[in-house]
Each structure stands twice: as C-alpha cells, then as structure tokens.
Length: 252
Image (cartoon, rainbow, N blue to C red; front, side):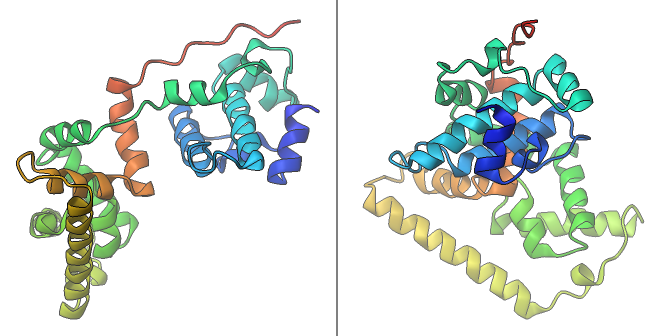
C-alpha cells in the first residue's frame, strides 16, 4: 500500500498537507513545525506498546520526508503522486532516529541560556506585540504564549504593550485597557498554583535549591506548552539542530 493510501487509512485524508495540519502555501519552517507538533502526539515514547500510534508515527515521518524535499514536493504538488521508490521512503529506515536528528532534545540549560539572550531584546518586544494583536489584548493568552514568561514578568510585559499603545504602534484593545482586577487575580492565582505544583515535584524528585532547580523546572514546564515550544524550537533549531540533508533524487 502506497503512502497516500496509508494516509487515507490512518488519518482519513489523502492530502499530505492535511495529515500534518498545514497547507500547500506553508513554508519549509511551517511544515517542519507542523510535523513536530503532530508527530509528538503519537511518538513511541508516549505509548511504546501502541502499534497504531507507532504506525502513524512512521507514516508521518514519510509525509515529512516528501514535503521537506524540494524535488519530491514539486512532483507531489503538480501531479499529486509520491515516488515510493525514493531512498527517503526506505522501508527499513528508523523513523524514530530520523525524528531525533531533526528534533534533538532541548535541555533546561538550553532554555535558561536562551532566556538570558532573549529577555529585554527587540525580538521579545516584537513577539509580545504580535501576541497582543493576535489575541486582541487578552493577557491570559499573551502570558501563555510569550517565551520564558512567568507571573513576575507580567508588569514588564504590560509596560511594553502600554508603551506601544501610547506611541500608537498598536490599537488599544478593551480586553487589555479595561481588564478587571478579578481576572488579574485569577491569572496570578493560577500561576501560584503552578509554582506550588513545581515545588511539590521538586521535593518528590529530591532536587535541592543550590542549583536553582525550582526556577529551571518552572521554565521548562512553561516553555513546554505547545504554543511556546513550537516558537521556542524555531528559535533554537538553527543553533542546536543539524541541517537536514537533501535526499537522493527519485529513481526513474
């Protein structure tokens, strides 16, 4: 059974783009992040004995292998077919190894180092304002989406937004300018609960305070959220992920 047929059987669509939850207009980086997000849900580490999940994981790897190769992607886009004989779709390929080469494990220390270089930069400011516009001033969504952001950062994040409003760089959304004290307290309460859970986990794992383990754990938990991690990965992948090599040309 060919790749397109397998996609239809396992994902109920014959479109390789729909399997990854993206579109034909997606950039190479968009396709890479889409593959990461979808494949993470069925990664063998999550359910080592789930044969269906493993099968889906392998098919997702093949889908990405096709769409990430310029020549194969062009053939698929123009003709709607996949060359099953290409080396990229080798049946004996270890798709889990392939995944780990594309997405090497990012450590807590990587996150801490990234935070040092990221906070207070123009890049962070642009990200904050982008989220502000995207979520129309909803601070819950903005705080969840901003990289390496904790409750302690909220006053600073708000000042970035307010300054941009004063300079008329962005619109003054009611959700931000008129946010109720009740909603602010609820958000803070939620953050305090997360910190308490991290403290309990720290004790269970026997971690000490000498290496600021709690702070690192909280940062890892926050950055691991889907929205944050996909964006975080795109910032780190150039530094930590080796460039994916081009697959050999399809056999005639």
